[in-house]
Amino acid sequence: MPTDKHTSKKSYAGSKVLQIDGDSLQQGVSVDCVIFGFHDGNMKVLLNKFSYYTQWMLPGGFVGKEESIDTAADRVLKNRTGLENVYLKQFHTFGDWKRTKLPENEEMLILRGFENPKDREKHWLMQRFVSIGYYALVEYSKVKIETNEDEEIAWFDLKDIPELYSDHNEILEKALYTLRIRLSISPIGYELLPEKFTMTEMRIIFETILQKKLDRRNFQRKMLAAGLVYKLDEVSKKFGVKDSALFSFDKEKYEKALTDGFLILE
Amino acid sequence: MPTDKHTSKKSYAGSKVLQIDGDSLQQGVSVDCVIFGFHDGNMKVLLNKFSYYTQWMLPGGFVGKEESIDTAADRVLKNRTGLENVYLKQFHTFGDWKRTKLPENEEMLILRGFENPKDREKHWLMQRFVSIGYYALVEYSKVKIETNEDEEIAWFDLKDIPELYSDHNEILEKALYTLRIRLSISPIGYELLPEKFTMTEMRIIFETILQKKLDRRNFQRKMLAAGLVYKLDEVSKKFGVKDSALFSFDKEKYEKALTDGFLILE
DNA sequence: CCAAAAGTGTTACTGATACACCCATGT
DNA sequence: ACATGGGTGTATCAGTAACACTTTTGG
Image (cartoon, rainbow over all chains, first blue to last red; front, side, top):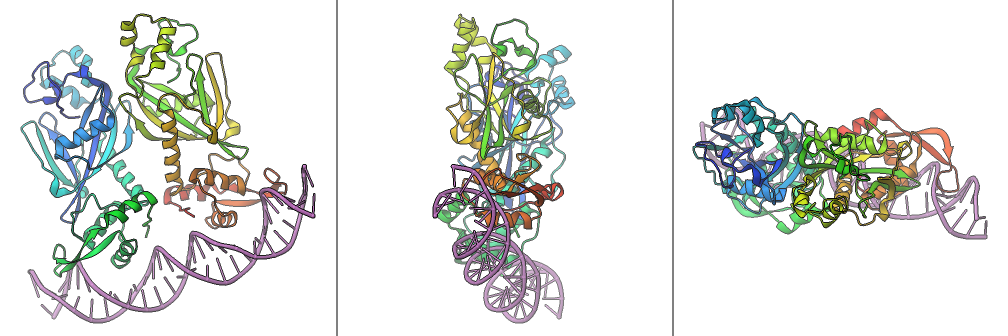
């Protein structure tokens, strides 16, 4: 539940979130983004931590009264990564009534000067938030992380995610699940990989999302047969010790596979 | 956006929705249910119409401040169909900022005595609602429809849906799309069909959702091969003129196919 | 010299698809 | 008699899955 560019009425040093004017927001609605990247042979997720919370959380934001939820998600992504027009899709909405009735929120308010319990109770931050989850696929190298004193932002290895704020671990799990379903219907990788990549990089993405090993020979054959990728006349040494061929996506065929369907289930 | 069982502060004859105490609700959040049934060889959707609206709409409801969104959806389904513990899944959240800023809502308030524009503007019904869409699969014959003077409820043939309130046609389309994706991964039918059914009934459901014809022979072979259904020693004349065999689901295998995945893509 | 990753090719088999013909019955 | 839906069987073809051996090079 993070900061945005809303004007402030009061100023609470070191806690941007309290500078937000609650009246300009759609009450009790937020968006959270699961931002996936790929680097060094590992799937990564972008997380942030506010100075006034102890746990990491998914980058999120509130929704303006006259703002569509998709626009709010775009804004959150742009704020945190600098990226626009990337793959960003809504996948699930989280609305357990206790999900944001958390002691850490109350503690944060106490720390920030709301000593009277009645004041805290009335504060717009203390209501239950229904949060709409989005997942994004971004090219790791293009993300510009800007950490400031209020907010720390970092990539985490998917295999090494800490315990997150509220139900954010569950949100991440659900995003992965959705990605798995999507992958069983259409390919993934275009948005995550650089222009030139090795077949191993692409395969690792599939393996990570599907959570199973794929035969490297059958995998390559299938991708080439589907026309999704084509081999370049270049080699690289990204992974092993031996040169390996570089590939690029055939954008046209890839787009076609996205809409027409494409099955990979080994 | 329909009625619920909330206590009223004021009473406005003939418009239950205005009897709802807005303070007990999560502001600006609602649920809408796309309830699918199957009858007479056709896929059906349950719609309702309130006396103070001209258009039909999807059965929906508001979310209590201390109520989970899934519980709200369960409640809406129970209210309209009498059914509990049926297949009901969230599929998408609709949050365009203009989606419920509609003249019909304002007109409804005028008709119900809110003559002062300022009063209407402040009314909790006039804000933008973010609506969480759920779809349900129910057994047609088990649904008990109870129409009253305020609310008319009826099944509509999927091929014959009128223009609905707000973006409800879009919500219905999206529900169908989601169902199509689900069907490409796991079977559907258990929740829609009676205990005993003919293979043609089952096939029609698949054809309707996938929007394409399936070869009846291959279809039956595949369902039997997967062990999803088994043939009974009974016959019926539901469809054609000739007796046809009745089948039942193998619940265990069906559940297994739901989780393990099952592909039908002819 | 060995481990780790990459390049290359073949085989077997399952499952999807596409058909053809006959049967039963209500109109 | 004929249209309509139901029952049964089969041939083909493509795509998946399983698998082995060699090459390269950094440590």
